[in-house]
Amino acid sequence: MNYTLSEIKQTLPKEKNLNDPLLIRFFYRPLSYPFTWLLIRTPLSANAVSYLSALVCIFCGALIISGNYGYAIIGAATFNLFGILDCVDGNISRLKPKLHSYGDWADALAGYIAYATLLPAAGLAVSLYQSGDWNSVIWLSLGFIAAISTLLTRLSHQKLENLMKNKKLNSSEKTSLFININKNLGITGFLIPIVLVGLVFNFLHYIIVFYAIYYLLTMVLFIIRQIFIVESSSMNK
Amino acid sequence: MSGLTRNHIKSTYSKAKESSDYENHPWAFYVIRPFSFWVTPFFIKLGFTATKLTLFGFLPLFAGFFFISLAGQPYELMLGALLFNIWYLIDFIDGNIARFQKNSTYLGKYLDSFAGTLFHIFIPLSLAIFFYRNVHIENMYEVGMTNQLALYLSISIMIFFALRKILSQKFTLINANLSSQSERKVNNSLIIYLMRWISSLKSPLLLILSIFGALKVWIWIFSIYTLFSFMGILMLNVKKLSKAI
Image (spheres, each protein chain N blue to C red):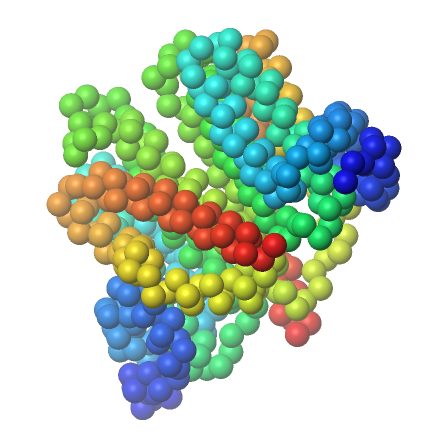
């Protein structure tokens, strides 16, 4: 079916738009409509677009660590395509509701791959283009620390949800200030553009140090908080 | 409580649990679980509940992590590896206690699962730190690997492990029934069985290879293993998705 741009825009629930990170609301989402208009005319499903966005991340990550500064900038800039495709798969799934099953999984897969490629690639990029010592392992290690910390935080969250499927968890979680800050600093927030800007203006090492500390602290605090949630629900049992 | 024996503990070990051990932790099924039946009464007599023992288990886990990370002598690497094996044993004992005392709690389950994740992360992380500290030592090219490559592969083990676990958890959350049905189907596969054997040998191999000073062999085995198991889970879940559509 051929949808118009306004029909595509109308499928977005207002509440969802308000909960999205700023960059999604004002940059990726508006850009996603023409992409959706184009891709909806192809046989690609929402899940296929999610898988495509994961491939985009791997390709861009490879460009960033290619050793050629020009390609690295192209890779970091093209990484923004992930943010756009992340919105496109949602648009398509709302337009073709019967054709998407488990879209949440495919969407999450792309997000995890994005974290696992961008942060280590940015770490290696510091060694390659900014520190002057490509053999230095500290920057790649910091990139990995950032990636593994955020992945473990998410893993811990999934485990808790699986463990307490039948229990209602704290519903204020989705709207808390911390969650909003976290979303805005994350992969669909300012992370991708700030890596690009850091790479261009030679301050990527500060970005990597910041994200390594931020995600490590977030992981520790998040796990402590989860233990309190589990402990309090055990008491209410 | 004074007449508590191995048989009392073993009587609470259900057929379903036995089958799950056989399929998921072959090393534990043949070695660790039988041994855990002998030592569980001792911990119960000391007054440990399952949750308390799970908490106590963090001690050897963190100690093992620090011994390997900061090792300066070969015996410190061995001691670290031994402590990881002690945690692995405790992980089975606390399950025995929970079943025997029928006092499993959400907190206990959460901490148990958290400790399990830490165990899988701490081994490669401690090796990564160890090789990071020794990265500039020259003439350390062993089993086709420099210290720098050992560091990178250790980190990749953590990344692929986290990705694999998180995707499995997400999938289970989305459709628990579909996941468990498909899990049963693939249980018959020789490759999956072999993968589980390799995974369950993580801590004993660490100990054996640390004794022989060949920790890089462990890194080779588990970097290949985690990459393939991640790809396997990815393809399996995508296959399930395409069938579900």
